[in-house]
Image (tube, rainbow, N blue to C red; front, side, top):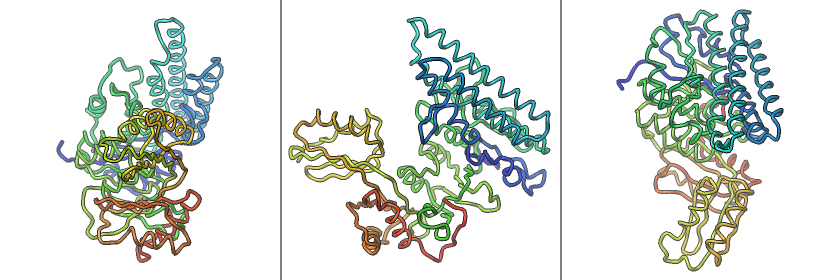
Length: 477
């Protein structure tokens, strides 16, 4: 599409939990009435709500979905759904001030919770017959419940902004009671067709129901897919992700808040490397959408509206520089067998096993008779992987080990001797690397270290590569 003057901006769940503060900074702040518009906001559910609807992202504590799918009785998921509705109403009272707005928001919660409950009950009745299997509908159940959270936050935010005099419009992409099965592009196009972006502020749900089934591929990363596709389809001037911190040179909890620097400018290559290290600036598939549509991405601190944040586009670096030092806990899978020497495609079965167990490969190295994969997975999964590989290669020696990977990343690392300087920095800190590698693309260098020294390794290399002269941040991550 022709490039327009509007922006498409995404707000995550943690920031949405402080939506009242966002009204004073991001949504309205000191802007004049004619400066409020030309911005489309894609919102996640309020912090913690998706955990209650599905399962806790970190602890795995069951939400409505987990209770429903593993239920020995109906009581568990009914209670869980009641708990979500109660939490949503509590948020309504915390965020909204006018009684009429609170009444509308509470009615919205009641209607969505009641509709979701009836849907799940009807599905249970249907699957009581032998011709229907509950397992065939699990994805749809997960998407239905996830959409309730996003719809609630978008609706409440719209009410709050309308009461403040903003011409905000609630845009529900969740497909609630929608009879059509449309593609993501069709759903977005239909929803945005009648909106005047220069006179209205759309508040859009992060979840979009579509024929492709966003959660099938992206699971809980769906909101960034909706956000990126919306920016691409509408020809946005810029896509912006608002976080509760700046995108900075390392984790301030590791290297110190007074030592980290805002990155300021980088490219999609670096964003991909961050995703590979589990530190997503944006989901890699969403980044690809923006990249192909030539829409630059900006990552900002939602509570510092005057700071431009970090711009991510396709521009090369003006000069070589390290931009970020980060790390990830990994499990190594080492397969040694002398028979692999000179055999083409020897690791095909290994890759097949890893794919079957949904194990993510962070990196790998090999020599004449050994292939080592650095994996992002659990030891429980690795035990199953080991058994399958042992069956495929009965003569091989298979070794697994819990380690960590520290990575030095930048748009252009050429001529910086990162590999040797990194090893020297580790040695100066009394540390050693088990392995290290650098590819010809010169965007990252990886150092394998013992898991208990990862933080020390990151701190040592951050001190060695990030120039003290760069401006520091007090609110970064």
